[in-house]
Image 1: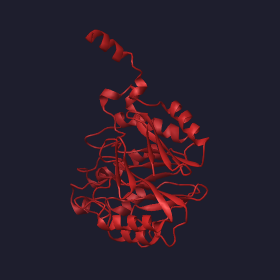
Image 2: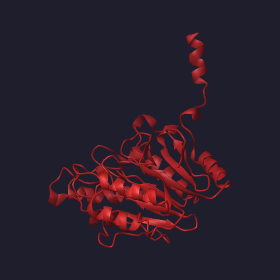
Image 3: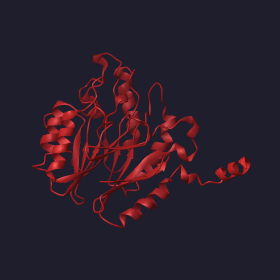
Image 4: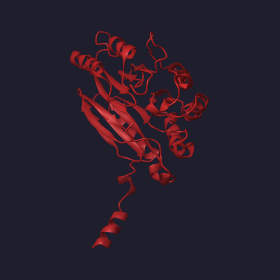
Length: 311
């Protein structure tokens, strides 16, 4: 009996675990797009491309496929969830060399790429004099976004947070900096960024009526009471809807609901040696936001499962 069960398990389709190849994902996403109003975006997180404990050989194949998928241009934009590289114990000179090497993948993408900052993206174990500043990180990760205008905080233009609008789809994309305090031991969203969020990005009095919001950050647990007060105030005014807050950091697929919005954690895009050459060496997603049916579809390429989130 055990032998029969073992043979049966071997015959199960691989797609039960590795959901889609890039070409299969494209067909799935385009089938969603034929049904109603939509916006598509690709998302990858926690790639840890370079650093003393990681190497490009492992993350590279996944990112090559991510670049190729993005350049098929059926996604409106790409988003990155943080931890571009691993800089905790890197000297300033090493970190400044590592960022362009990691960015070499994202710089080959033809659609806008919105970058978020992760905890590994600062050399936090070094002295303050050797730490990469927000300005340096902004400039090293800056990309040409074409006709997509990024709205920064004029009082903190290098704060590594901003929003972009898609008027045709009535969607606002908000990129948050989860480490804006400049001290890795103090994660969350603080000061100037909170003011900007309340008075500009999520201001009920100026927010376009009937629009949908997508929020991205490296994590969400220590966002702080004022952050959630701003979210609650926005939700209570009925000007628009927050479809999801999408994050990385945990290296796991997660989902919870906080203050009425979907909190969606996505599997890390860093692949171990055991997964090279298998379908699981890929780990990224294409999301389809259906603003008419109020559902966010996640189509997973490689490791993990596809999911749907209603809002």
